[in-house]
Length: 310
Ligand code: RIB
Image (tube, rainbow, N blue to C red; front, side, top):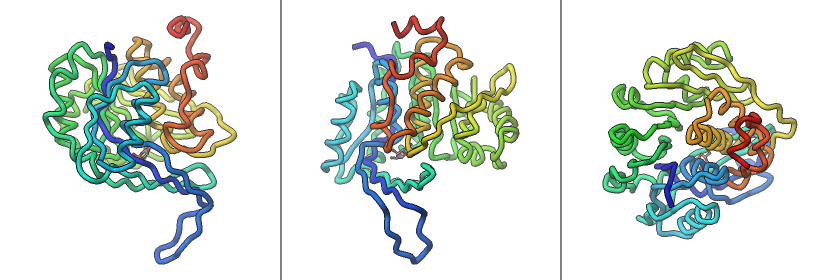
């Protein structure tokens, strides 16, 4: 199979707790519901790409535990190629996710085997004749930077989701074609507040000076902004009356962007499409389990581009 997307990143087994509020320090609080699901930003993004019909190869590492096997199984079931996933060490990456009544969440990740990916796992072959590599920041920084260098050498476009936000060298960042971050990550990278659309537009324009092509800042219910050579522009969110859980919404958004990039659709169309996808994902619990398939969201492509789907 000829892969058109390579995802290099994390696989976490997610422990999701639905609870009315976060506990205070020293307080024992009773949650409402427990859910166990495959997640991790890398695996989530790979699954959303595959559900949209892209041929995806994932590079990553899980532990020799029951979670590792489940994480590989989920990728397999979704049609993601797993021959570059290794099983090393005792424990897989784990995500502990607390979901509040509003659907907002906060999470703590345990690195586990995500930090056992080796330099040799990321080699030049991955990038030859591949239109797009997707990276996040849940694996060691030096490996993200290695992937950026090799991808650039092989003319493979680079989408970096700098989540959770990390310092990335100016040199590596300047090679990134598409930087995608949320408000918190954008604020970390620019050292300024990003709490409004206006601040996000300003921040995106400033981050745009540091990357090769475009910057996208996602803003939850406030939509997203895009900055490129032509300036910065705001895109509204898709209204969603029944928000259940926003876990993985950013990952499904990135899957939508990847679909448009691989199919050479303009980002001006890609962002509303990606917003439709993430609005579907927040109507159910979990990451991968909540992600839509292409037929569920094809209506959000313009008629001109629905031919891709047919
Ligand atoms: O983006 C959501 C993901 O972030 C969760 O699946 C969790 O594992 C963390 O990686």
